[in-house]
Structure formats: C-alpha cells, structure tokens
Image (cartoon, rainbow, N blue to C red):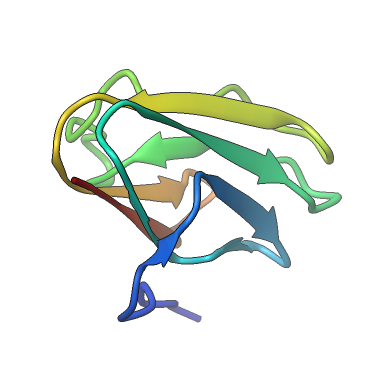
Length: 99
C-alpha cells in the first residue's frame, strides 16, 4: 500500500513511525529546525532521504536502524521540500517543508 503525503502540512517538529507509516506525513518547519523521528513500531526502521535508491536529496539524512522507542534527530538548514522514506519500505514516505 502506498501512502501519499497529506495535502495540508502540519506545523510540528516531531514525526512518528507507527503501523509502518509516518505520522504526520507532511510537516512544515522553519529553517534551522531539528525534526525528531521516533519509531513507535515493534519493527525496526531506517529513515533515509529521497529519492530511492540514490538517497541524495539530503545524503546526510540517514538514521541507524531505530528499534521501538528510539529517536533520530535531523536539522533542516535550507528552505525547500524534502522527502524521507523508510528504507525497508520505500513507498512509505513523508515530506518536510522548510521555510
């Protein structure tokens, strides 16, 4: 199943991974914001930048495998729209809009 990012971005600096998908799927943050990704699944997940398989949109956005309860923090320093996905299921994605 493919989940498209939600059309209206939510202003938050926190993205959770639950039931194999990102919540929320689209967020809006200010430049310089540190976004926290937290895995709430029992399955481990690796958060990585788009596009798959190159991962070169933000090559340094590359978490370790996160087990349940672990967090990954990434600072978004440049304005733009950035995609992230789960390496174990690249069709599961989120978008971070940085202003």
